Length: 197
Image: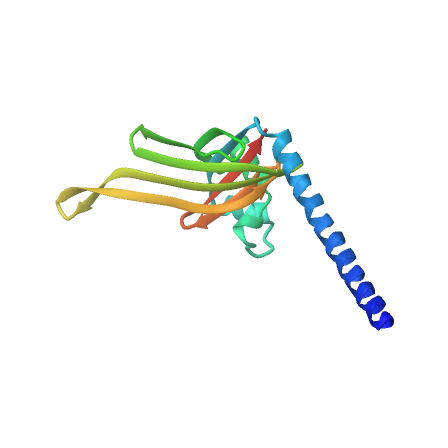
């Protein structure tokens, strides 16, 4: 009986040791997250979104004729170089928001310069580690412009509406812009996002 009791105590002791070690690891991880959140509790995070169009022939030069890779895998600095050097790249719109750590922010803008442009941008950024920010976002741009179409003797005015919309959640690093969405029709259009604390 004493031997069975000793065996039972040994099994219980090993079980308690395993439980304490595993729960200790969990609390260390939770403590690390609490420390990060405590350290950046009052932080303000700025999130910038740039919608950029690149002409098809310029895009082919960027990728070097090695077939067309996924548009989101192209380095964003190559896209922005086209814009800076005015070589087939154009910024369609730029929006920037500042939000508290874990708080939501949103903005809506409208421009009418020969065409009507409406941009809606919502973000919830949260610092999840040193140099890592989780960002939930919704970005939508609608461009309406009038175009005259000739049909026989008469000219008709048509409205052309172009939409670019994306919602996602991803992890970004401050100072490291990233292509978060892209599409290709007549030109390639890229949504490039960057964050800063």
